[in-house]
Image (cartoon, rainbow, N blue to C red):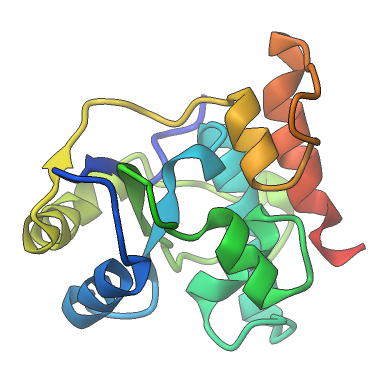
Length: 184
């Protein structure tokens, strides 16, 4: 069983009219580039977020990232693309969004085999105070929810076409498969 990914769902009082204002505020108050904002629908599940994190972290450690910073690399992979601008369009905050995720990318060791990886159970709790500080500076409310796979999320990240039907049991797998396609 995977521990919670360090992601906090927030809701704004009004729909976002200018995403760059929110992103600038996050960038102003975050302690480093391991903190950023993600579109609510782009997060498909705990497994999805940990899978994208693992791929991002492996690329970071090996020096093979496409993006210049780790948060942009995460957005690129979660969006299933090689293009940073398309990644931001798909999984970054957009005009009209009412909810988003504050994301923290832990930097613990991923060298060795996947079977050797241990995700500390305290990862979420250890970052909670910083996430709350960012959320308060954004003037947003914290929501008691965790990421779930949705059709609208798959559409948003470009994994399926608008209106395409997907079996409920296949949604999480499609999120993860789409992330795997980022470097193909």
